[in-house]
Image (cartoon, rainbow, N blue to C red):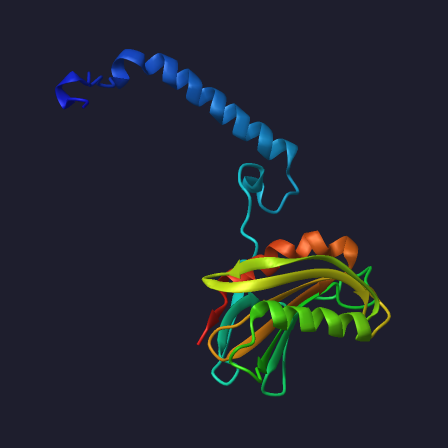
Length: 207
């Protein structure tokens, strides 16, 4: 066991090493000056030293009927569809004919209390294979959504607007409801928007 008495406490005296540290501070000041000169048009010059958060302005959606609360970027379009579905759509980009990415959450009443996540997920895959154009299953596995057991399905398909999409569906079953959470995006935008989607899912709570 390490004894406190055996630790040598070394005091720091500014007066003894002042000239050395004043020189170091001088170098730091020169570095900051060079950064300001080299990047005069950068809106946030300190981004050179740290990464900005994913979203500064978040809105909160809470719906007791749907039974959930979630945070989402405030510039995304939110639409409530009936009593059991909500969608969040990213702003359209200048080079995009339609929205580049979106997240949808839909609740389902299950017909049997014995239905498992695996059986529900298999049923969803079967429906996608029959009802979706150009469906290709990329992966399927058990996973976790916050503290809940979940099943994750990744696939590519052509949507109802004849646009090729890469998608991820998460099936989660808190109590007697099944939620199907769908993220889809243009294939070239999928990884770009994935961190935002992950931050939204991290904020998701069931009521």
